[in-house]
Length: 108
Image (cartoon, rainbow, N blue to C red; front, side, top):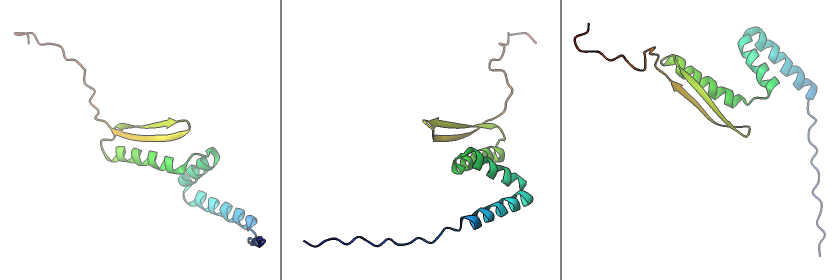
């Protein structure tokens, strides 16, 4: 019976955590100065932990409404903490009564 040799542990390179933190802070400051609107979105995603991919799809549906009729809604279905559907629906603005009054013959 031959004894199995333990595999050698491969040493991982040290993470440059201080440099990474500094680079991220520099990047955020640059974005804040150049595009404050994008910075606000980044900060909200970081602070809330919301999935950026979900936010992307919500924004996409809102944009589709804005490009189309300019009226509509975006419905987000969530089940047990999982986004299952995002539905964007355009609408037509009417401001019309559901029922019209009946006309009587001879009335003007």
